[in-house]
Image 1 (cartoon, rainbow, N blue to C red):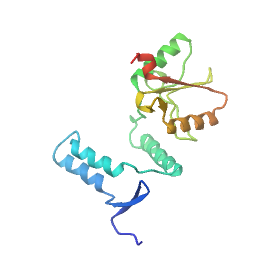
Image 2 (image 1 turned 90 degrees about the vertical axis):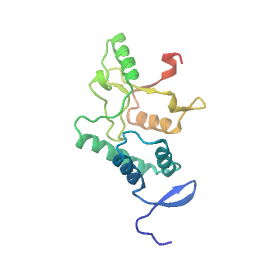
Image 3 (image 1 turned 90 degrees about the horizontal axis):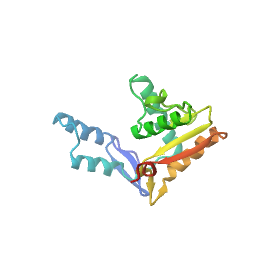
Image 4 (image 1 turned 120 degrees about the vertical axis):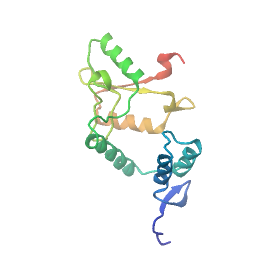
Length: 176
């Protein structure tokens, strides 16, 4: 099958689907023209339908991650990876209780980047040889950690085999 100009192939549930590569941009532009700050519910649904079921190879995921990190470093000096304020409070209390100083967002001097992976662990302490990840409930399905997060942990542990890896589940500290 020849390539149709202006259309992009997306594999969805084993089937090819041709969409306009600018569809999402077009939807965003419509909202911008209308002066809307938030997307209308219908628009969000359309965007989700386009993206839903799209899967990427590990190599593509790494390229996307690297591009995002580069954009954080180049485009905006004030830009940084997302963080959870509750996690930062937890890590600050951990450091206070253990008379130590780890690296993490907000109080810990900013998140540490594992350059080989393009990952930012939530907390790393080189003195204690400890890495901690703070998991919100959306990281779990049927009480099981998502497999992508399990794979991420394995990759981090392969780079830092001498470090202890500790997961903190949000509901365990908030009694939800």
